[in-house]
Length: 627
Image (cartoon, rainbow, N blue to C red):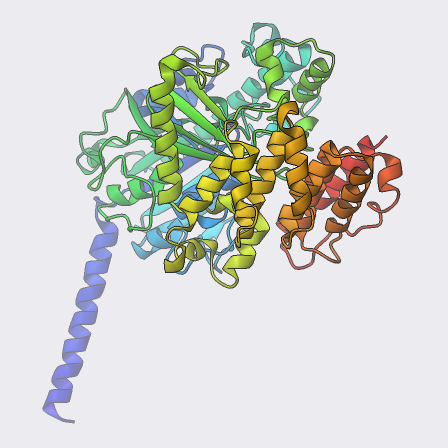
């Protein structure tokens, strides 16, 4: 054997051993903290350490006395799957096309779920146990994701990233009966937008009961950490996944839906790693949101967050300055289509409703199982509510602006206030800039964005070079459609656009104007030319306008057109779901629908299971209310 070959072999062995030694040294380094996330479902800041004296949460409160409380944390989305999608991807789901509740879209190859990033750094990643992401998942996301997943299964000396998620406080548990009461319903504080009914008191008190039960579970995990002598080598985060499961909290872009508790504990040995931004036993007013969590964890590890992450690190080596704004989004909730966006600063909260003709309290199967919702809606129908309480079931304004310092329950809309005109303009501009910057694909109908993306991810579709000006132009069309001061004539300039998404917004704008008596005739007349549009999504909205606001012969033709669009043998699930929404708003009679609806299929085999129940829900709803 030649001398050079022996030398080369020895060199390879040396560098292999050297690399392995370095890898082992990195894994054992005290600068690589363990990370524990404890999360609870449907939990707003109704926690003792946030000043809620009705709450009973000793374990979270104890963690807060040693850690830091973030007073202004948003979940970005007010419902679980989109909120979790934000965290797992480190991106706003409305830039991924994954913002709709229980959707399932493709990620581009350039973006990976965060456990992959941490596993590359030698971490053992466990999730106990809910996932619920609106994304197609690779074969392996976690080292283990199950109700038995635990840091204790890692290799000796290996750092861990462990998540424990508690469902005890979930919306479904608020309404579960029978229930053993802990909190006195007579002492609960009822927000002014809810009527003070026995149902409201029972549900709110039971929510606090479940928070107390959840807190005990938090205590058990922390006790396990202490038992393993890991408390002083583990950075701990506790947070809720969005606001409470009560109506007008979960699913809605108010503070009650987006504002969540976030408590961070950093042991003494890692204080130099997180920097001066962390102060134990303190409160922090910085604006943070879920999109910031992954960048922050990477920053704490000393790893620069990848450029595609859309949040800002708030601790660690790569922490960024205090943001001026944080953002929220809301699109399809289960079987119901809607679209709103939100932004807040330290004082003001702005909500932009792109479908103001759809009431906040639209019937939603799951939400209406809560006793408070049913009692609240009954009182609305009986005209027994205050203005603040009735607003939930009425059409909503295109813009909402709230001073959350003086109006924490957000019942006084300042969007029409001359005094706050400059604030309104500033917040509106900030929101539009954000939507353009992240390429908000929520402006395109759900099914259509998937069709246009083809084999590519919606994220990649929105970033194709030829689409560089697409989102700004589409946002302008959506603005014209949904703002009340734009005339029908101004809308009609886009009626013949080659882009079906633009025409969708024209049809939506005409429907919005048909709700106003002064514009109704003009809007209906303009809509007639769109009832046969090549796009099924445009046809659904146009035929809703004609069914609701046209004459009798026109209504009959429009109802039949909507029924045809509901047929899953002829159209895909998204077309059918859009048409079913429009059909429901048209309130067809039993004579009008006959047995046509009941004979239509309810499943589309071309789509994942996550989508399948929504068509049947809408069919059942329409059939039950038809008279």
